[in-house]
Image (cartoon, rainbow, N blue to C red; front, side, top):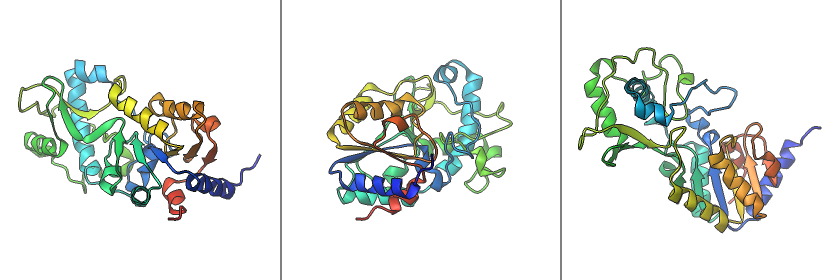
Length: 279
């Protein structure tokens, strides 16, 4: 059975404009136009994500993680919002978006000016000490890691010389030689530092999840932008909205786990779809 993509786009735009309180749930597909690959698209790099227990319990795993993160941050830390981010932020100022729940950790929604933004999985720009709980800047940590590993100094220009495909959506990057990488500890207590993001095997803080549910319940439309909804952390909000009888609009390249719950599904790029929304 063939699908008229133009009709689905028109239906999606009409559904959005007929809403008074739409809330957005965004995923990795939102940031592909900013040079950050997604997890499951056709050009996505293969990855074995770091598990929380592995990071905490194994010093070699932490060394490998930070060596890769050091290389990847040079690119992630300089990524800029794409037209889709900016368009979504403008829609927010016009009252056409009540807020953004994002599964992304890149901070690009905030950089574009969207408010409010709930970073479901945290932000790579922040670092937390697992011992004393102190939070600090990832940019500051990058400088400390450069001082500890001067022979590995990287910049945005040379960080991924072998190709963009080595970068991953969580800021990780392929590094062949990591065993001599020197890791920085917390300056306050000497404890273990970790990006303030939710690793695989780690739970999203309950207050954050509760805030997301509240924002979905306050909306009259849930718009999913660029997420395959493969993991339950995002899919649960689609299921919640559908159970409450709220319409769900999904814009994503390829199938998602929420397609059968969608009032309208647009198979296409996020930036292109947002460009079609009139003021």
